[in-house]
Amino acid sequence: MAKPTELHFGAAVSEGQCPGCGRLVAMVRIGNLDFHDCGECAAVAERAARKSALQRRFLECEAQGLIGAAHGQFTFKNWRPACDAHRPAWEAAWLLRKNMYLWGERGRGKTLLARCALVRGLKDGLVGEITGPMLGDARHKALGTFRVWCALPTLLLDDVSMMPNRGAVGEAAVRQLWELLNARVGLRTIVTAQMAPNSLAPFLTEAIPGNPGGAVAALARLHPFDVFELAGKDLRKPAECGIGKAESGIKGMAHE
Ligand SMILES: [Zn+2]
Image (cartoon, rainbow, N blue to C red; front, side, top):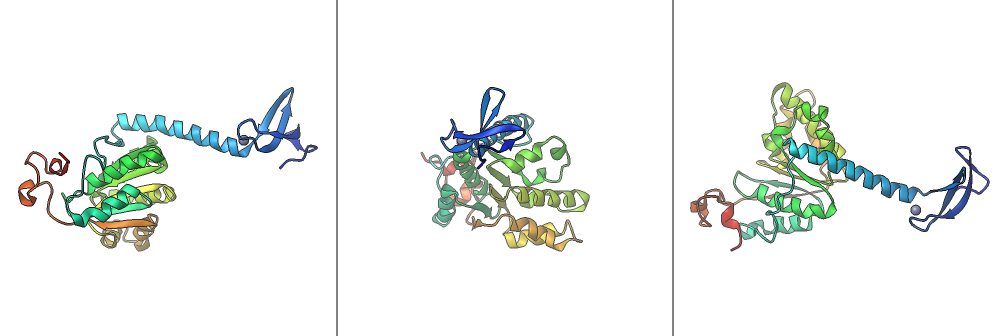
C-alpha cells in the first residue's frame, strides 16, 4: 500500500476508502480529482470489460457459424439417461465440477449429455460448442474465432475423434488442439469422442509423427477431468433399443 508521501506517476498519493469496495487504498490526486487506485475493483472492471468484449465477439462468431451456442432444450429437465449405466455420467455432468471426456460409439447420447452439461455451464458465463473437424483451419485464428474458443468459461469440443489427423491439416489440427487446451487450463472443457483417451493419443500422434509427446501433452491439459464411457445400444435406432419412435432416436429419450 502506498504511503501518503509517495509519488505515483508524479501525482501526490494519500490513503482513502475505495468507493467501490470500501478497502483502504491508495488515493491519487491529479489536479483536483481523486482517483482510488484499487487493484481489486480494477480487476473486477477488467473482467467485466473482457467478458462483454468476449460476448460481442462470441455473437459475431455465432452469426458466422464459427461456434455453436447453448441449446435451451438440452436441459436435465427435458432428458434422462438412456440406461442406468449412464447415470454416473449424467450426475457428473449435472455437478460439472471438472472437465469431462465422454466417449463411446456413435448414437450413445454423448452429444446430448454434453449439451445438457453445456447448458449447466451457463451459470458460470458464456458457453459454446465446436466440433473436431473445425480444428486445423487457419482462418479461425485470422478471424479471432480461436481466441473466443480459448476464453469461453465453458466449451464443448464435440467429436474430437473426427478432427483431421493426416498430412499438413492434421498437423495444424493437433497443434491447434494443443494451443486450445493449453489456453483453457482453469476453464471448463467438455470433450466427446468415439474412442477412449488412451486411444486418442496415438490417433493424434499420427498427425505429428516427429513429435510423439505432442498429442499426450495436449490431452494432459484436460486434467483434472472425469472420463465416462457411454455404452449400450444405438439411441438413433429406436427399434433396436425399444424407446420412442423412429423420427429421431434421441427424441425417444425425452420425458413425456
Ligand atoms: Zn475497491
